[in-house]
Length: 182
Image (cartoon, rainbow, N blue to C red):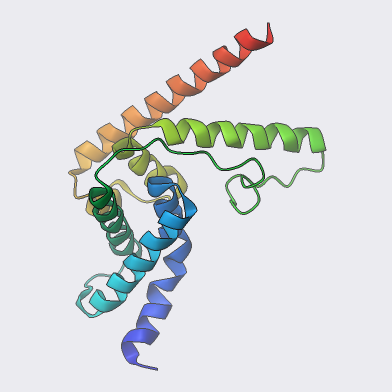
């Protein structure tokens, strides 16, 4: 095994789940996310000798983002983000899995997870990506700025707006659901 391969497997492969999570939220269809991650990992491996730094994760996620932008540019159209099928949510997404002994609480939690995924999916891509990188991947503003190629102030502004939009959409969905029940 080559030294490059050993270093890549040790430093980059632990972030494969984060790469897939970002690709999934950006591209949404699982097959598109798979293609984006595969392309990104291949590009990262080829360029790994040129990596300079001590934190591979932001570098790798910026490659994932660039692969998504390249793929999105090739399709040249904007599409609505489909929601996962009912059986898909929560089965393999650790953020949505609930370890609750009460089936009713588990059902409520799963429904809230589906609603949250729906609301996040409705955010514009530039806001959705910073929200996913900060809240789901727990990256710093500096790392997000590095990944997106945006100034830190822009990242902070987009994150604040994303959180505001998320809150507004969540509340309007709750109010809309309340009107249906009445």
